[in-house]
Image (cartoon, rainbow, N blue to C red; front, side, top):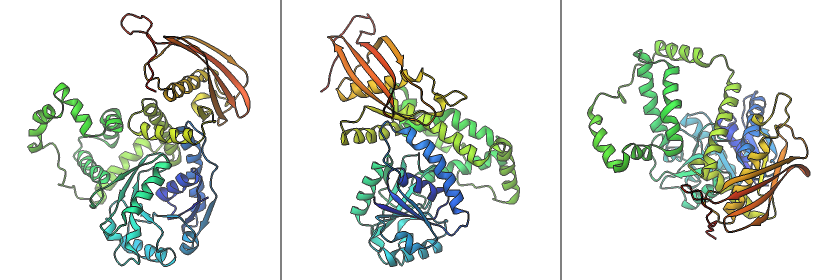
Length: 441
């Protein structure tokens, strides 16, 4: 197995470790914190419960984890190094120098939220191997990684790192010009500054601001981004109409943006007190599990629609399927939401598995038209519990000009779990008349 070295095992470093480990890499984490082992174990527990739920194919065997307090021990033999130390430039310079004394040619990505790669490269033994690889928490679930080179960074280093990250189901965004805080955090900082003013001026509480985001534009941004969202808001005339309507607002007092409130103890207590009242009933770990569960549902919904981050996950599944055409068309595990209070899987979820497996079968056979299920038969044959690995195979039983019948066999490991038979037809949505099933292959 290839080895990755993670320097710094906090929230971000632990997330990186989980992403590499669960994708089959051996990982050595270097962190002097005496609680590092406990903290890392808790992050990995959450990642093991969450990341496999995004894949419709089998995850590779988990890599081997090693903890150390020695940077030389961590980086020796590593094919890739991720620096995730605190945001202090002097500390990062010392750490990068110690890394390159042992591994001067090994690619080093930094998780820094704000520093430019040229800042990190100052005084380095080999600046060409150093760049920014800025992820988003939780690293083991969210696809985005901002890859930021400086003019001194070898392009081949960025290309190889991007290919590696895509293999992990991540989305490497190549930032074409280095800038403080890169791309995403500059947006987040602007929103954060405005939110501080809204709370300070008594316009909204922390909870009300969060509700405004998660109940509205946050969901839109999650699947369509900023500019595409505004293009749609312009109606049939698109972005030009939107700009004509809202362009004048740029001169209106809608935001204080760079007029930052004084960051004093009073403001800290106001923000922290409201935040505690909002979500202090949950532990951080419980909030993480709630977050992960919500993200899984959101990402799987996007995956079913082959949209946004879901398209990235489908591309990874397609790669896994192409690597071994003999594997079943669907792989997964019994998710917590599929089980009752005893942990047993409800049989109704066999139908969902059958539908997903049938969708993969149709995609692989070039059938891109909507087919309507007109008959469904399910025959349970066994029992499964939360976390059990499942797979499904698809057999074409018969087909005609406008219909086909599929038999989906669902197994728990090697044991039959259920058999579902689907009869599907292609019909005109207006008249209901039968139509030939089109194929793009």
